[in-house]
Image 1 (tube, rainbow, N blue to C red):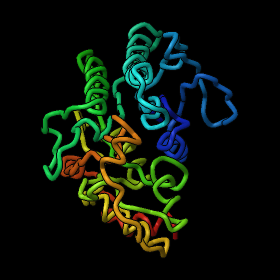
Image 2 (image 1 turned 60 degrees about the vertical axis):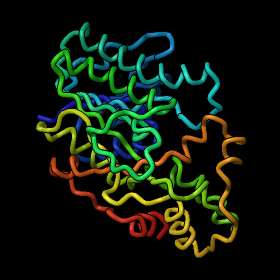
Image 3 (image 1 turned 180 degrees about the vertical axis):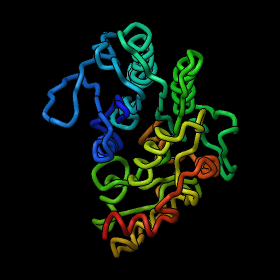
Length: 303
């Protein structure tokens, strides 16, 4: 009997290919959307409104597992106090809505809950090797991830198997950070950010999708896992490797950290924080990365 899976954030960078992959594997897939259209005959959409606290409880009826990817884009708009609250509440209130639906819906049989999280949990840690046992860092990104994961833990307290995937920079041509980083490089105006020594934990979109599918089927997995390549690189290495893929050279000087602080304010943490994450726990669970090294990942994406 096929498992029925509910996905939130199904229109996002990971959600789109993950939905397609699970459908291809015979899963019954449902999604939650603010504006359900049901254009995809293979996927049933249900409505919810996080801000107003409403959800169609039919979405969780007969569901075996939930994959929770929903959350406002952290880098889309300046971090005003209002925007910060929106970023956090889009993650925590959505979890509260799902928990409520699970507890009150008819024929609710959810056993597994897989939640996105992010390596921002660790804050700026320079060269420290970061495992799942490392303490949370400081700053808004860390605070967001701590609250995000705490909300997921409430579901674990109710008896569900909860898996939290602290995800690095997802590499995909379709969206996310990579096209933004590649754009100036393609024009010949790429530059290393700050010192360039900050570590960038990255993961190819293929591995990100398959890691979520792995967490779905591996009932031994529980708790938190770092979802990033076994070989993170520094910003300098990332920039130079991406430039080489596009047959460009990095000739501009580093963009000074002070300039980034002035231009981005608190959002500088997105590009300057250093996260040297270790993915041994995920590999120990039986997951095998297809892309271990950055050059092979970028070659696959850009041909």
